[in-house]
Length: 160
Image: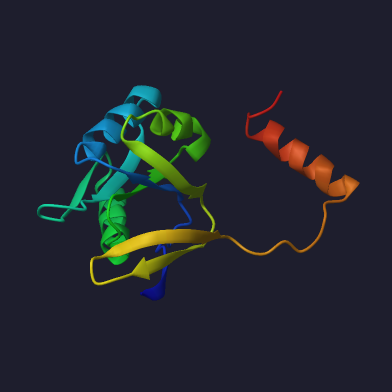
């Protein structure tokens, strides 16, 4: 077994969700889940098929995001992995909906941070061992940091 690290390519610092599923209909079901939750959602989705043709399957509503998802999925080439890139929405808008798709087995991360994916590779294929999402902690928030956090959440409409 060999351990590898693959960095998710995300030049625009878009939000994305990286997960694991178990069936070829993942692309259609996640697509339907997103558009059913966020009208006019802009996203690209790709899924690494783990048997049969072992192709990267894809879908979405924005061609550039679809291309970004396909490129990252192929770089990972880890069986049954999916990645969804989104624009003008946050993972929190669709995360529970995606978790409720029957074939979705796990969410590895939902972020706009730089992400490195730790893969194990054997003669059979690749699997995700874990992710490094963003950076290490630099300290504990102060009262000023708390007020800043609370103000930000209210400014973007997530808290009253």
